[in-house]
Image (cartoon, rainbow over the protein chains, first blue to last red):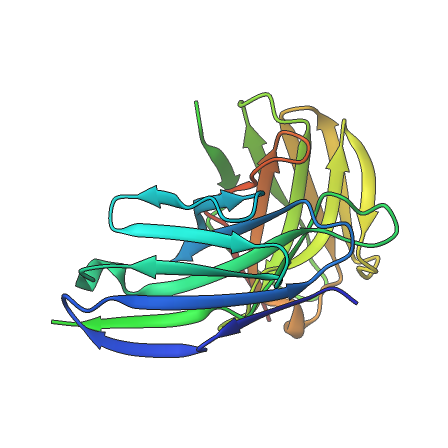
Length: 114
Length: 111
C-alpha cells in the first residue's frame, strides 16, 4: 500500500523563523512528489519534484527531493503570518497501473505567530 | 485561463435528494479528478477520468456517480447520501502525468 508520511504534524513558530517540513514516502511506480499549501480552501500548488538533488525555489520557499532515501523537505525562510496553513505533500504513482494517482500525507499544520 | 471552477460552492441536501456537483476547466487538461476531504484530513481520491474515460474508481459507493460529458467538464451526481458523506469535494485537473490543479471545492452538508 502506498504511504506518505509528513512530520511534524503541527508546528508553531514566530515570524522570521525558518522552518523545515518533512515528507517521506513509499510508493510503487514513483513519478513525482508535489507540495501544496492549503488554507481554508482548496490546495494551491507549490512545487513538483521529479529529480533527486535539484532544489526548487520560489521566493522564501524551497524544496528538494532525495529519491534514494525516499524523502523531501520543504523549507520556508523568514516566515510570515501569511504562511500559516496546512502544507500537504503528495506523491504521484501507484500500483496496478494507477499512474495518475496522488497519495497525500496528513499534512503539517504551520502556525506563524507575530 | 489557469483556473478550475466548481459549482455550487456550498450545498445542503437531504438523504433522499438528488443533486450534482460540477467542475470545469479550460486548460486543455485531459485528466480530471474528484477528491473528498473531511475536516482536518488530507484529500482522498475518489475518481480519475483520463481522456473522458473513467480510469480509476477508488471503491466509491454507488451513491456517487461521476460523469465526464466532454474534455472540459466533470460532474459528480449524488443520490441517497448519508450524513457521513458531508465533506469538501474537490475537483482537480492536469495534463497526463503532470501537476494537478485544484478547484475551490464544494462544501457539502447532508442532513
